[in-house]
Image 1 (tube, rainbow, N blue to C red):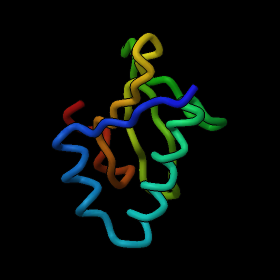
Image 2: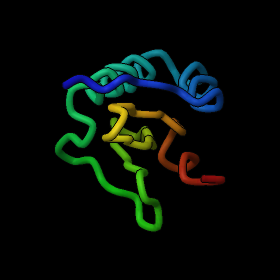
Image 3: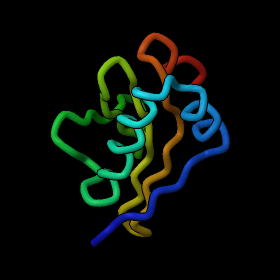
Length: 87
């Protein structure tokens, strides 16, 4: 079972702003979410029903997993000092 990856407009914009080496690593990690939406090292965010986080070096990707429809929606992506603001 493969999940479909979706991006919010804000997440797509944030990923485009990442420096190239970091952006490539983040996109590879996001591609991996299609196969395993909760990989080793992922963490469920407290207070959120469907929200998860993965670490990619100094970058974080926040995403929602919808198991019924097999969809992963990337909500935010960015440097760890910035990504948790305004969730």
